Image 1: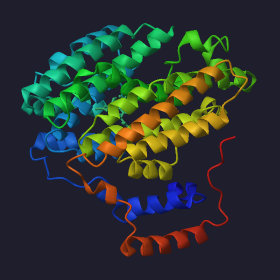
Image 2: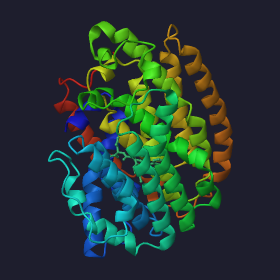
Image 3: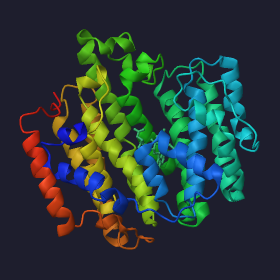
Length: 429
Ligand code: IN0
């Protein structure tokens, strides 16, 4: 209910949220495909998939049959690796060993691990990891080699950062490459191997890397406080030392100005990856793959816009409204729409630009490049959006048939009356 209340001042969002949650919008956007979870271990994997990420699992489950098992297993393998990396209670030597040998465990259908700290939310995924390895071994060899190779490279990269802090911008890019760029590279190779996407998608590692870096840098920017509280920080010293003497100082009101300038610097840095993301997404020819890739990207640009010059990032967790997330998900089903979303948030960033920031010039020029590339991508979209195959009903998710508009309208009116005097989400200060 609070998600509905938060969108009360945004009627279109509210309409879409109600449609999505109560009137089958979710099922139309992510149509249930033939059940592929036909073994006990695959059903268990599906349970872990849904439990770790409820909305993202719906996007994975809507993938075509050629890809869905491989991507599901890849996602769970990465979750397993991430759980080891995140666990600050593990002995460092053991952590190093686990990370660098994780790829070998994929070939051992008995292997599991019960040594994670009690607070690790995916502890039991590792306890029951044999369900993942069993399904990994049931995948076609062409998928196994990609997953194992990425797992090896990522595990070694994570191990490198056990004792290393992110000092330079190069370190920042390298760390993001290990934990997210490699995900993009692996996914792209899985897409191509499945035959659903061209060979070009899997070969261009630079573009695939950028897709991951854009997502991960956005996470790192948004999670400033949460990471600080957990004793791990990913904001590069080379950047934050320009604005303060200690990263943790940014959380105190005295250092807010420096904190905001640093935050804005990192937003400008993350935006550099957007043109590559346009190129990447413009190459996708399968609708379900396009949705899978585009949805996290539009969430990221919306999150960057919310974080820009927002002192709340330094004080508490910020998140886009559920209603905004649903609207974005529903819209992000064609390249033309995705570009429109990026342009709209980029305009918002342009209008908020803090002219006195040392990185204002960089922000402006990056946004100008985004506008230019967006125009080129729109021309491309006009030619390719209609060619995308295995079309789902996704585009029809918002068809305004009377069977949807009438009940949603009634529900909306009732809700508006009920929440009339209640508060809504405070605007960005
Ligand atoms: C992802 C990515 C992801 C999806 C599609 C294409 C990608 C290309 C390159 C790199 C990553 C790509 O998407 C998920 C999205 C996600 O999990 N969203 C969460 C919300 C949140 O804020 O965490 C949700 O619950 O919906 C993602 O963030 N990552 C991820 C992990 C594995 C795979 Cl297979 C795909 C994590 C990360 C670190 C960004 C790579």
